[in-house]
Length: 245
Length: 283
Image 1: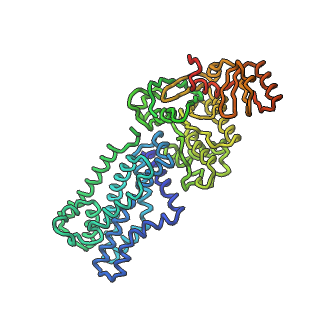
Image 2: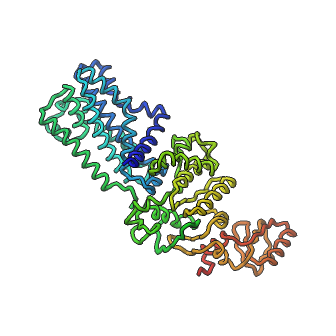
Image 3: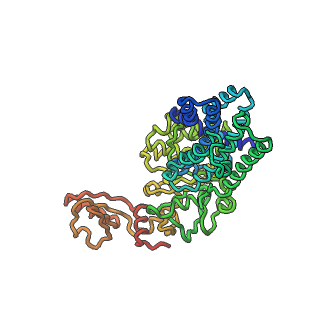
């Protein structure tokens, strides 16, 4: 167990150290997360819009922490060939994925933590920080599993291209993450609610009194997010190609 | 490149070389044996473990330096090696010692704090090799390890590798530098189009060439010099295979006619060319 933790931590450090040395990488995530909040403030948004933007920013941080790993995976596999060296070593693939996720989670804290603290301050409910962090971890893990699986199926560095950004738009900016679900026509609300980023946003918004759902409803959302994360983790282990066929 | 009908046994504690033209299947062999790639059929055992069915057991015993690997991340040379060893599960203290020992042996200690992205290609290659070698794995696969290294670095590198073999490790490497392969390896296997065409020692390989000497003539060579002698022409270079007395006479004539000539005993490169051209009688 100790060995597994050491292996995971070493991968996390190999993820963190290079990013800390490139300041522009380090700034990218907070800017992406906070950009909608900036526009809302610029256009004189009300309290509700600001809170929606804060919740959206937290979800964006966790989504990009997972999706950003796709480029990391692909570059480490096809350009640096580090993954080839790690495959031919005693490192379990799970330690690699968890290490990358841990590294990304720590790197995302400078962008997500201020948003969480600001949200807690505005709504006057400190526990929202812990709740948001839990949702952030689940969503980040889920996105990391998707990233890892997709990355292992890619044959060249070129394939990764704009995919994380495109997925970011589809998962964050189109569905009701930065705005209320009620703004959508009734017939697509059900579909939107099935998107994990929307579920995570709904959880944060519920505990921040931005838009409340029933106790049963919130429990179902936690269960749904947890189950989808676990299912994707299992699926990721099953179909990812740690060893190439 | 697909491998077909490859049957190969690598003795333990040896320096085993794979040679072959580009795309021959050397890298494919290394990738399969080091559990990176699953073969469509066949068996491969590494120190008694089935690399197809028991990859976890094999992975504890092997390490690999990939052919086109690039240690150019934003990590220092020391960090690349140290964190890789930790990722393999090595204890911190041992990882520190191994990192230092390997870096010193490969002439990397002076650049230990330099970011690898700022190092020259040769240094990056050495860092990558150090990552694989510092692991202390029983079987180390090196895919073209000395490509891009200067002659001094190559000598240091092979000196260290020979020491590892003496201490009980098995090194399997591929290369296009046949002089080097001849000097350092215990066994050589030649692969072409996914098939093994020769396996044996470098001395056995050289015996495939019937002549003892090779004279290389550069310039406008008169046909009378080559009369009755086995030779090959590549542009304005002529490779003549002959015995000692003939070699002396060819060089004397070449000097008289103002042609540049070099003579040397036949080597692995000559055997390689013969085998690849289908000229040699391979046992």
